[in-house]
Amino acid sequence: MTARMMVSAALFAAILVGCATAPSDERISAETNAMIKASFKARGQAGLDRLDQDDTQRLCSQAAGKAPPKDVADRIEKQNLATIKYPSDGKLIGDWKNGEKIAQDGRGKQYSDDPAGPVGGNCYACHQLAPQELAYGTIGPSLYRFGKLRGYGAETQRYAYGKIFNSEAFAACSTMPRFGHNGILSEQQIKDVTALLMDPASPVNQ
Amino acid sequence: MSLHRVTVVALLVAAFSAFAQNTTVDGIAKYREALQDGNPAELWEARGEGLWKEPRGPNKVSLERCDLGLGPGVVRGAYAQLPKYFADADRVMDLETRVVWCMVKLQGISEADAKKNPFGNGNDKKSNIEALVAYITSESRGVKMNVSLAHAKELEMYKVGEKMFYFRGGPHDFGCVTCHGADNQRIRLQDLPNLTKLEGAQKAYTTWPAYRVSQGELRTFQWRLNDCFRQQRFPELEFGSDASIALTMFLAKNANGAAFDAPAIKR
Image 1 (tube, one colour):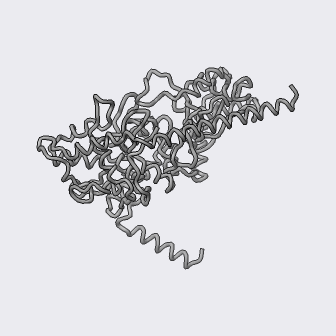
Image 2 (cartoon, rainbow over the protein chains, first blue to last red):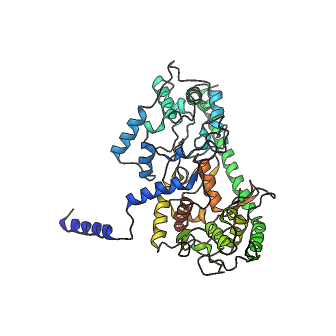
Image 3 (tube, rainbow over the protein chains, first blue to last red):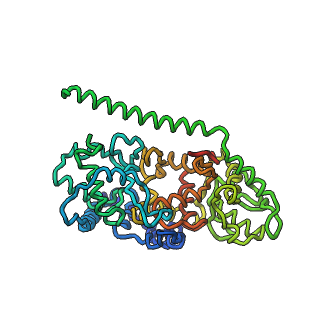
């Protein structure tokens, strides 16, 4: 940067700071948090504590839909990786038929849902999986032939299970929910969805 | 089966899937097109016009002196410049909040009563607010969206609304941006507008309120936000809350320049 450009930049910054009508980002953030707290009411199973952001949610909100800076992304991924609990019996593959039901089911955790369950993963809302299901969303990538394309090895099984358990461990500020970390799906349910992706007999891999 | 035949079968299956999917998507597009003729929203518009002109409440006056931002009684084009700052209330208001304000101040109806039934449910629970909103918004059809941020409080609401759009929370980490931050996204087969781009914001905002065929009800923008947050697994967004107005301000301003085209009809 030339000295002249630096002076211009400094002047511009000074004008921004001095301008009384331009609210600072920090003030707007504080105001947003206060306004959110005052604008929602607890209903059904959805308490106001759901508005309290954890570190990942706060940092990803700040990133405003873009990839966060590398150091922030690394921090998010490291923190979330540490939360993944693999099954104590070491078995990651459950029943793909049950996994398909979980992938189809969009119920759970809304204030309009029965708190007693059932709770699904709603995978088809965002992903293509078995080719028989035509009504799939496109927010996430296609998972058709997930295992067939990547191989059915132990490492891929661990990745699939871990990704479902806590997606933020592998891609900071992913749009995908952290199904295990946030207690949306049980360990058995995650095994079953892993089977839908990784069992060679699953329709996903045909 | 030879490898060659396996390949041919696989190709045929893939081609059929693509064909079947395109047929499904085309079918939905045709269905939406067919809906455009004879929109039942007109029933809400007519009832709303009646409610606007009828003397009601303890004061037995109509809403015809209500100032929607263009002066008392001016309905034509009013919705296209909302939300805006109202000095009498010292608050930025959207249409629903302003209608409630007028019911309270002009007609003498209590605020609790005025806000009691914002979202209707069948013939037994018709919402006066939805009907009034249908009428008032219909009077902005064809008018270009022209929302101002000239007042400091308007600018502030817009900035807060922008932050809210990117606010991620709840058990699923969802925010508005999860579904509405990129092009060509769908949930199942439902297309999602990219509200971070001019075209997406314009198309989405100018087609609410809308008659929802699946619900048999006319739904306002307040309802749209309320139900988005339900699906985001958040607690319930309160009707007329500041957060709802901030988010409306952000989306309405981003639609500036497009001709308003509602009440519309949606699936």
